[in-house]
Image 1 (tube, one colour):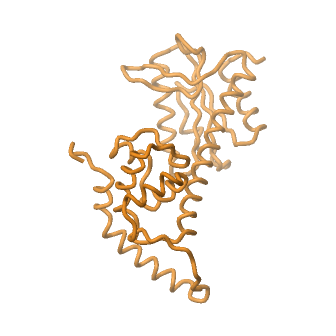
Image 2 (cartoon, one colour; image 1 turned 90 degrees about the vertical axis):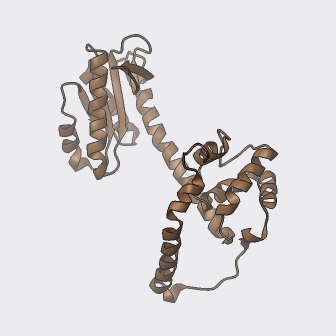
Image 3 (cartoon, rainbow, N blue to C red; image 1 turned 180 degrees about the vertical axis):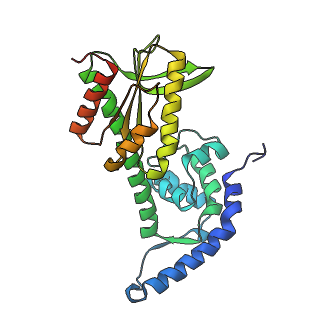
Length: 273
């Protein structure tokens, strides 16, 4: 990029040789690993090397649903399109592009596409990306269910809100009241890997300290999703702080969420309905 910051082309340039070498090694390893299960089949192949950027643009204009698979084959995400092309808010799964935008994007991704790719491989790229998106969306719903339960079972109204501490702006996943001094703040955190415990717990402890520095009379609680039940005590120990007034654990189950919220409301002294 002209401003000195790297573009996607720069990133690819960093790793292209190593990626090409690894691809050869992986293909060789797969052939050696499954020699008795390899078949040659007739399959539809899209030959990208035979088309122009204009041909690619026409395909995207006429069939916008193909964009995600094409971008995935190039390791390009919406953020790269915004950064390098200044085209914002592209829904890569169901894009609504002008003809000019489609042409610009086609010209942008064409150099990164392989010479050819099988249609089943392209559709699998889209499928995996879609699955990942939907899983992340469902994880977000878990946090929303916690927030809704806080309001449903407590007499206070909880909502996401920003606050300022020591000149910096921070966000609380759930807080009450919705304006003015915060009286109750909640951090809702998913920790799904053991190696993330230290980082995530440090984030929570730091957030609690910021809340208490800005609102000394407030209460601060934590709802944690951590699937290793036998290690919950380790998380509790790492969250042991004078700034944290309650720590509870919740799975994705409705009963678990409601029980956790009930215990946290009690720990914070929030009146129940």
